[in-house]
Length: 373
Image 1: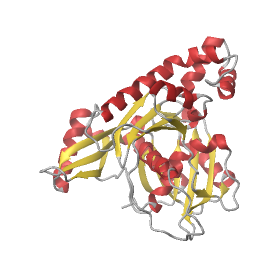
Image 2 (image 1 turned 135 degrees about the vertical axis):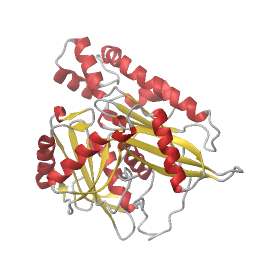
Image 3 (image 1 turned 90 degrees about the vertical axis):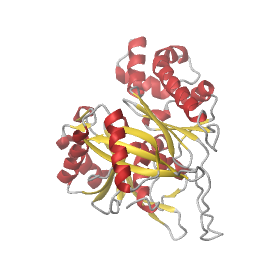
């Protein structure tokens, strides 16, 4: 395991590179242990600069990143040490259950799983894993392991970009891991200044289904105290925009405006928009039901999924939470990324920008949460 895809050393700020948008967040802690935002911001670049997860035009992305870091950050990014996420839709992520074993034996067992299930030669992959749960209730202890295999071409393209920018890569992980970390943090409350510091009690996280609704794809995961199930559909917000444009004979810019203003909510355009979006949303619904059946069919203490959280640029589609609530029967809400963060004197982001920062926020949290090695 020569190239960790989870953590190494100490990351200082998080950078999330999406299909055509860069987001950065830097966090620290206040004296009362609440989170203080030191800097955040985003910038756009051409979507053609990344193909199949590989940064094919690093100059384009580097220019956007340099402009973001030097001119567009609210507050400031005070270090050149970065922790970054690669798109989970372009990696191979599996939750494995294996008998407890030595590190060498686990390394070998994970490699065998990769060779069996991943349709890419093992020499073309970086492989890493993390033990997320130990089941000591059985006679022979079992381990639940989150395994990631990432194409070297993708990871190396990110490393080349950061070298071009003069940034030190402190860690690389998948967007799924950082998103789950960010969402879990949003469940916490700000410390009460009247009560001062208090020791946080480790409590169970209710079973949650997470959807990162991106431009080109949608990543799904189910987690409780740890990530249990993952999935991806190759459909996203851009597919809905294109479908609306084709159905209503509009340009894609006009369709995007119509989608953003009205979405799936009640309006004179609702039926036409819903009909256009139906194929994408139907596929999303099928994947949700499949993952839900798989999770709830397993012997877990957590039982049924109690909530569905949506994030990503597509999460702001009007009426989407209500649609998913009706479609799945699960209480649905949009992730409040900054829920327990203190901005000090900084201007807070617009409410429609909240969900786009969840992954970058989760990346910046890795050090604070003590999840680095």
